[in-house]
Length: 585
Image (cartoon, rainbow, N blue to C red; front, side, top):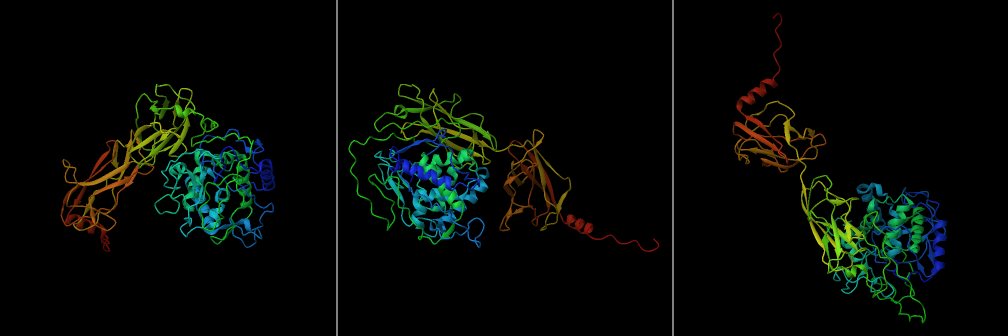
C-alpha cells in the first residue's frame, strides 16, 4: 500500500510534522541506508508535494494507501545477550518482526549484497517498507514457505481518491478485471510486478503474495538505476520511487532508524497490525484480504464544498537522467499518451542488433511516438523490456527501462549490454498505460571468438589398450594475437582429418556417470585463454586417433593420440628404476 493520488494523509500538517519530528528523534544512526533526517522537502497541509529531482523511474504500488502509524519515540534497547545484526529489544513490542518475514528481508539483503554490492541495501529498509505497506504481512500471517495465508489486496485504483490504473493483468493477481489493485506484503501493482517480480524462495515462480519473492523484488526495485542506498540522495530517490510522497519518505525513514536500533523475531502470526491508514477518511472499496481483519468501514459521505486536491505524479521505471514525471491531469483530461497511435523505430538501421558476448551493442534502441497522421508526441513514457533466454541487460543490470520521449517524440533506451549467453532475444517497446502498438527488436549475441588454437605442450600422448592417457590435453586460444578469455570450445574425437564427425571407437572422455563420451561441449577458456580438457581413456582397439578442438571464430587444433601395446611397454620401462651400476664397473 502506498500513498493515493490527490488526497493523502488527511491528518495533514499534523501528521507530516509528527513524521518529521520522529525522523529527527531517530536519526542518530549514521549506518549506510539511514543517514539521518531527510533533506528539506516542501509539504503543505492536506497533501504531499513530490521531492525535487525525483527520477521518473517507477512506482511500485500505484500510490495505494499505506499505514501511517509512527514508531515509538523511545528506541528499542538491545539486550546484552543478543546476536550481532538482530539484537533483541527490551520492552518495545513494535521492534518484533515475525520470524519468516524477518528471514525474507535478511535473505533478500544477502542476495543483493552478492549480486548488486554497490547498492548497499539494508534489510531494515525492506522491513520499514513492509511495515508501512502491510504491517509486516498483517502481523506475519504467512505459511512456512513465506506465502501469505490469504492475499493482501489494496483498494481498486479507479481514480476515486486514488490513482487511475486500469486492469493490466486480467485480474490474475488481484481478481479485478476492471482496475488494478496493489497486491502482497510489499504491495506491488500487477503491471510493476510483471517486470520487477523475483523468485526469492526457489520454488520456480515469482509470487507477489510470497514474502520471500516480494522482499527480493522490492530489493531489486530499490537497487535499480545504479543507486547506492548508503548515500542519502539515492536512499531518498529509491523510497520516493516506491511512493512519491514526502510523508511516505519521512515515515519509512523513521522506521528504518527504529529497526536499526534493535529488532528481534517473534512467532509468525503474533506481530501487531497497524491501526491507522492514509485513506482513513475515504470510502474503502477494498480491504486487505486477511481472515480476522476488521470489517471494512462504511463509506463516508463527501463533505460539501470541499475542494478536490491536486493529483500526484505517477512515475514509471526508467534510468538515471530521465526527465522528471509530469503531474497526472485530472480524470477526463487528455494526456500526451492519449494522442499516440503507435510507436515506430527511431533507428534508421532497422530493428535487428548484433553484439559479441560480453560487449555492448553499438546501436542504441530508439522508439518514436507518433499520432495517426505521423506527428511526433513528446513527454510520453516508453517502456523497453528485454525478454527471452538471455543474460543481456541494460546499463545498470536491469531488464526493463522506461524513458520519456523528447521534443522530437523519441525515447532512447539505455545502452544494451550483451551477456555471456549466446543466442537471440527480444526487446519490446510500449507506451506506458496505453494500448498503442509498440515496436519489437531482435538482438543476437554471438559467441566470443578465437582465431587460433595451439597446444601448450608437445609431449606425445600415448596409451595402452584399455588404459588411461597420462597427462591432459591443454590448449590456448588467441584472437588477433591476444589471449581469448571466456571463449567456448568444443572437443571431438573425430573419425579422420577429412571427416570431422565423432568417432564410434577409440579414445574417449567420461561423463558424470562414467560412460564414454567422444564430443565435449561447454568448455570455456580461462582469463589467459587456456582450457584444460578432462582425462582421456582408451578402449581395447589399438591405432592412431585424432582429437580436434575448435572455437567460434575459426580457431582449431588437432592432436594425435596413439593406442598400442608398445606404448604400454614403453610406459612400464620408463616407470621401472634403472639398475644400479655394479661395483668396480
